[in-house]
Image (cartoon, rainbow, N blue to C red):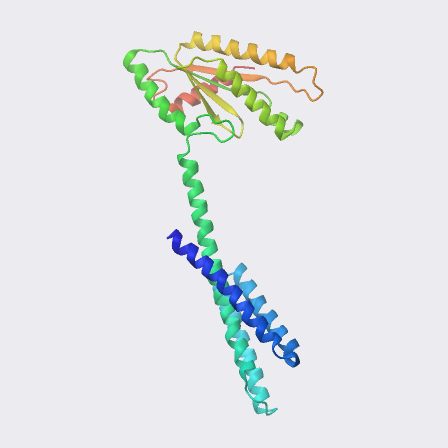
Length: 283
């Protein structure tokens, strides 16, 4: 399907060049009819442009009106003025609809390619398991991993806690500082989080719009408190080291943790919801 669409697009583009070349040669061949041909060439282009931005139906209606008007004018010249019907009379009656048909073919192929591209982008977004900006596992990956870890926790009675954190006053910071500094802030928090957990724990980017990180910790609620204190301590060190810079802004984190319980958090989404509620208590 994609190959046929590409061939249709390439064919329409090539035919458009050929039609333009034929019209230019025809227009330049007789200096006496130069203005006459230029006018009809512009009309042909105008109808083609309208077809490109509307539909083939509109283009056909305009072509019918043009053929009717030009045909009437030709008949008037032949009967009333005694003119002779020449190739000049037939050329634009043929080439104007040809321009419309080629434009429609090119437009149809382009729209199909755009639709296929959008469909592929949506499919890629739905299947992607990594966040583009941080290279962390995303929400989709979290749901898959959490399902496995929850099953292991039930089977082997291993404590499992989800720690959720985001930046305090993020929306206000976005209005105050530039995009580069925001990206640097996200990178710093990601780096701090990665160095504050053990090798068997997992870090995820749960939301990119309002950056929210999730840490799956193989520990109980008290162990999660230790990790939170470690995060706050390292973030305080970064804030202290940047106090001397002219464009300094201070980062503060909101954190919430919820230990896995089969009855209270039967699904990963319910678990995230309960962990996010804990953020409300961190003021």
